[in-house]
Amino acid sequence: MKNIIFLLSFIFCSLAVFSVSAMQKTEIEQQEFSGAELAQMLAPIALYPDSLLTHILIASTYPIEVVEAHRWLKKNEGKSAEELVKNAEDFDWDASVKALLAFERVLGRLSEDLSWTQQLGDAFLQDEARLLESIQALRKQAELAGNLEKMENMEVSHDEDNIVIAPIEKEIVYVPYYDTRRVYGSWHWSSYPPVYWTPHHSVYVNHYSPFYWHSGIHISFNYFFSAFHWHNRHVLVVNPHRSHYRSYQQRPRRAISSGGYAKRWSHEPKHRKGVAYRNKHVSRKYHSNRVKVHKTSKQLHSANLTQRKLKESKKVYNRHQSIKQVSAHKAVTNKRIAKNTLVKNKPAKATYKRNNSTKFKQNEVRSEKQLHRSVKSQKQIARNYNKSASKQSKAAVKSYNKSVSKQNKAPVRSNKSQTSRKQSQNTASVKSHQSKRRN
Image (tube, rainbow, N blue to C red):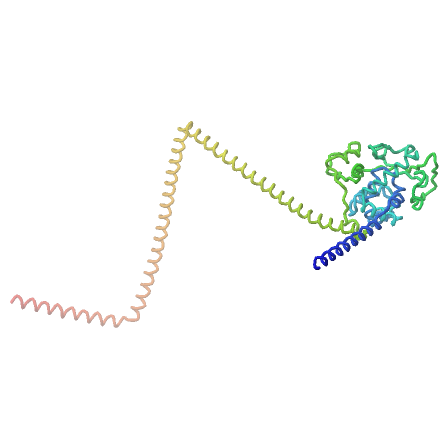
């Protein structure tokens, strides 16, 4: 009984998971564009040259920057193309948006028909390969209608089953205008008619001349940085500053698509500036990629810093080693030179010693003379001091004696008489004593 209950619960859970996954798949399929919708939105640009078409597809994923660029372009209408390119370098726009500044009409279409632009960008982000397949299908349809042969300013070529459209002159790009209701012949999706852009002024287009060409636009070197890789059905991008090509003729489409310096284009969510994606699947995809790219960029930056530090430390170590080697070599050579000079110049060494000894003796004599002079000067100073001191003491004694003699004349005389009396008494006693001995 327990086994039966376990099996029933397992079957019920598997059915629930399957139903949820099926619901998610149907939601994603409903949110994706159908083949008819892709053909409808790609009809007015599918016959553009490949280089311009890549810029339009990339720029459509950043609709806010397209609007900002178009508004800025309107404010600076009087400036030349070179001035516009220089001034646009200060803006943090994507390179594809900056490349479209030279094509005012195209940028105006993208900005004015903003819902179409956003749908085109969403379709390009959802399934890049499917969108490129739809472009090739429309080109083949126009070829079957016999209209691709009537493109005067474009070079139409075949790369196996793929149709490539490129300008004849590499430095000049002509933007074609055509009626999407005629150029593709019979339209297969009647419920999804092609997008039709009304021309800005009177344009004459008919069955015999289905294309109207605007004036050619001279482009700069940085314009050639993207191309289609039709076999793999994705867009390639190259950094013009890192590539070794520096002229238009040296950078053909095949060089970009097959060169080792090109990489597959990747969407940058920072240029989207908060515009919501069409479904959650796409938003999760690019949000997770943004986090991973941020982390990997930090890791790469730290790795580059460590490599630079290692290189700098190696350079410093090599410099120290070279300096040590040079100093050691100089020391060895100086020692050898000194030995050779001593061996060769022995008499010179003796004369050097003699000269040094004589100089030493002369210095000793000079020092003795200086000492003798200093002693003499000290003795002379002492003598002069003693003379002055004796003179001063004698004068003081004389003055003192005079003062004492004046004050004590009488007592001095009495003393003298007393002393004389004592002396006479002593002499008398001595004589009497001598006479007694004789007797």
